[in-house]
Length: 431
Image 1 (cartoon, rainbow, N blue to C red):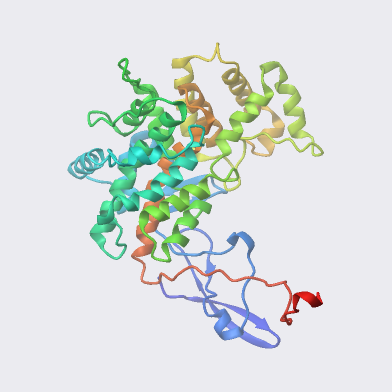
Image 2: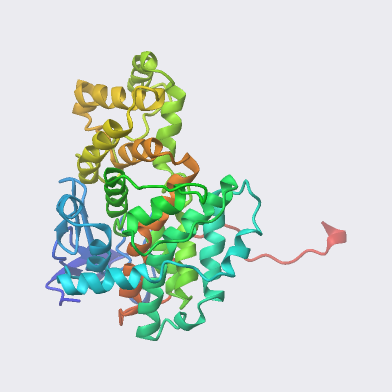
């Protein structure tokens, strides 16, 4: 960390304390309060940690006001337009864009680790058939530490590297197996002759009875969804992975914790909520009714998939994914799918309505990813598992960065205690 050149002054009951201020390469300055409790005997109060930097990082930067998302300094639109998912994985993991030889070696390594231990197949059968795929994924990913003992020592650099490759390689296989299990179809093994996105689609939609050919437009759209969800700074699930990691937990347990957090509807379920909203609207002729409700301050209804908590202008990921959505919908057609007809008309209305333009309520990445996944044929129950497998590389990159940080400490948030003070125990006969 760079030396502090500025100070903040805090006055408490007549006593003045100086707090160092650090300036990042991008974003607002941060006030260092690490010694505040030791020096002044007070904590800060920040529910949700929305004004607290819990770490320093070199991986991802977001400027919500500008609508900017950078991975290792590279704009997301350039990565999604010119790169592919495994190259972005390399960038996030190692900090630079690989040479052709480095990328080929990395792709081969990941591809040759896509199979899971055969005994893990039996683990799936312990779940009910109607289990949500996310429930299955949390259990199976957590159980990986029982199968891959040779990559659980977080203090060993080689163990960390092997665990990273295994998680990136096997999460698509596990997600596809969770899907196949939920619909009662046999598991499909990965194929080394297919790229990352095409392999995932093949494992999800092929059956032993006939050949399944992955359309390159669909595979490219899937790859972009992976890229656009790869990392998103210190969000809830990433912070969960970091907090679990701070205890020294093995990487598989930490990623399982991240998946569990992502399962929450306020985090990873936004594109599923968007599709459920489209189903609620039902037909194109009902769109004006729901637009009016969205504008009514007294109506609790909100349009899902429009606007973003972080991006106050446009979601940079949405601009990229809109192109893929248009390509997929043109390829697969929307004429016979009322839900996709509603999506296209709702997009048109929102992009041209002065109310939405003024409030910058533009379609976000969840809107476009939802309609793409619907068009491809995924049920909404698979939307969050796909998000999870996409985000795995971000979680692992953050995990590796944290483990290597000499400033790492076990996470221990404080509290503002408002409960009872000390009182004596009363025997039960006297209560």
